[in-house]
Length: 148
Image 1 (cartoon, rainbow, N blue to C red):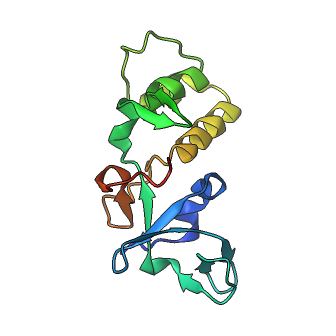
Image 2 (tube, rainbow, N blue to C red):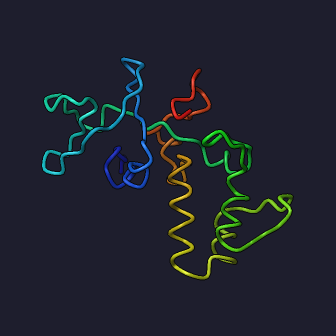
């Protein structure tokens, strides 16, 4: 079954200012509004500029960026280390583990799991595989990071 870019795929990123791109136009767009009835997004403040999500790609970081230093709000951080801190694991940063292992071993409360996924959303990390199926574009391939 072919996946489409739908609200459930991107809803967690919306509060953090998810940006979209349209390959044909090669621009970067902010989502201003989502109409649940028509399932269209307004990417401009103009009410009449509503488009289906299917014409857009989300701009996300690949899951491999969990293990690399990234910039967020002027601060450099390694996302997997920050996820470890959220889950109560305080290593020296040299213990690189996968996200699933971290959540299974250290996230013992639902609140911790939610906070970890909120963190992933706030850093625009693609844990749903949207880049691999062509529903998102790798942030690292852009000349300018639209989130900075």
